[in-house]
Length: 93
Image (cartoon, rainbow, N blue to C red; front, side, top):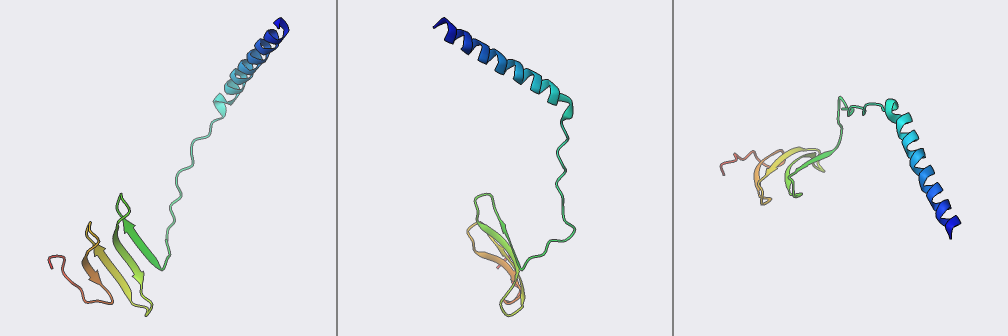
C-alpha cells in the first residue's frame, strides 16, 4: 500500500512539473490572432438580414424571372417597403 501511494505521488509530481515546464516553454511563443479577412466582393443570388431572434427583416435577391428585389420587413414580418417585382411602396403605408 505504501508503494502505491508513492507511485501515485510520483506520477502527480511528474505531471505538475511537466505542465509547468511546458507552460514556461510556450510563454514566449504565442502568436497574435489573425485579423479577420474581409473580402473585397461578396457574391450571392440572395441575401437575408435577420434580427437577434431570427426574424427576417430584409431581403435582397433576384427573382426567378430575373427581376432584382429589395424587401424590408417590420418586426412582425409584415412588408414595410418593397422594390423590384412589385411597385415601390413608401414605408408610411
